[in-house]
Image (cartoon, rainbow, N blue to C red; front, side, top):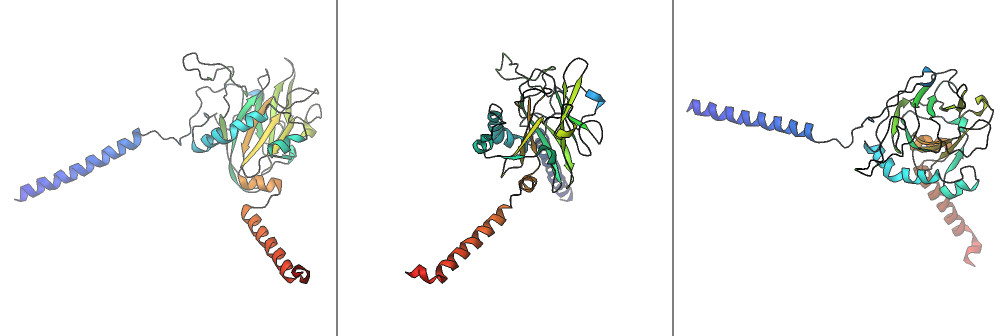
Length: 289
């Protein structure tokens, strides 16, 4: 009787252990749709010997990038075909134009940069600096060491594929890490003007080699994104379509840059104004006549 009891007890323990192992195995085998995936093609370019902040990750490979891929990227790609310098651009897109030299974070945020596209044959590099402008000081790091979009199509699948010479696809992204509140963000484009001259164009126009503006920045209200556009031509006519990208700085930081109140504040203000108007109407004796 005792032996039989011990046998049953061990059998139950064995079954429990086996069930746990199977459960853990299933977890390991189940694909994690929210996991970030590094791109199989990473550019080895390191202009000025700068380091990269992180490797490029594949478009749509985690929940945040999948949302950007489906909701915002198609719209921003269309913006790249528009006249970004026209006054009507903000009216047509409901964006707010910002001073490129005044991009900052009001509160700490895990910041990310998405590649949208390029319209140049140059192999430009995109970087950022949080303690200065351009690459001459501060802490410059590369985001996309080769910000070139691939147009090559795989004949078997009909899908665009990354190549060693054009390593990016729209929606590919790089995490900049958590940037503290008060951080001033300078973005720069490294462009080869000639075989002997390499230009660095900053969002701070005052340090550009030709003294001209080479970046446009637009905020998309009610979203966490800034839309940035760079021009890579020295001293020439600018269309600002050479490199397009979006920066996720968080909705709160976007509101701070555009001086827009929080949605809850807007609701409170609206309710207050409605109450004022109601009281004015009820107390005005002429309203009865």
